[in-house]
Length: 395
Image: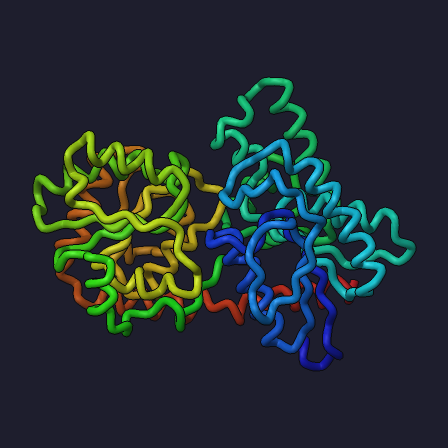
């Protein structure tokens, strides 16, 4: 339907340090690229810090020299950054005259909603939410349940959710939680599942020279890729590693991510498995496919269940067997193609990793790649965004 219309001008608001090499930013980038491939014009308004991406129009707030945070997580600094982004975006909307405001995260929904309050002619507003705000704040120990701060943010999120014309969530779990916890209308929300670039993530790289460069041994490589924190289950993984090594002595763990890399290096040294592990700090997104192709299996011990898990899609696209925690999103992505462990259970995770390493189903990786190619392409996500817009304006 989009190709019957003239080219749309899509105004994205991303209240984050776009682009940094992590999942949230990957989603923003790949959605923008997919919409451009469909023939639409996209501009992204974002914070001052982050990396410009060739081919993506990006507008930034004024430079704030003392704020250089790139990793995920809440910060009180975001209050004044979001105020600056509101003014930057408001005048940007007046200049760009977009057909659609497509905003990311709850702060983006708040900014976009308030922009519409000051406009004579309202602009269709779609919010792309990757998590429930109060759940994320609890996971980062930013708020505690039944406190005044918790009640405030609960009220704030409920108010923000009323502002967009439509909401798209990154997982079915997140959608269900919003409907249940906020008594939200089912007609105003849907799931826009995470996608994956199957050209970037593929099993066909020649990685022999790359392996030598990283000094990665010719062993059974178990890959973890992503943020290094408790919420992603990295503490659970590091408790499971010695249990795996007792049964599979030629296993080698490859950890790609940030922040807190020094913390986990220290744990590996203290537990005496440092020689069985290779650490790689943050890696440019456009190069990450080669790193994933070095592995024999992928692991994710994710604890939270209200956001997507793009590392699992990357593993699947590369044809890796996956050992993962049994949170809803992992089951949603893998179905019967994964090896599942109980949440926060190192023994169970170690068993899942061992089963994945010993997997005799040589076609499992191929089935995983076929599944993501069929169901999780970014182009299909772009079409879904445009279809949602078309339904809005038809009303």
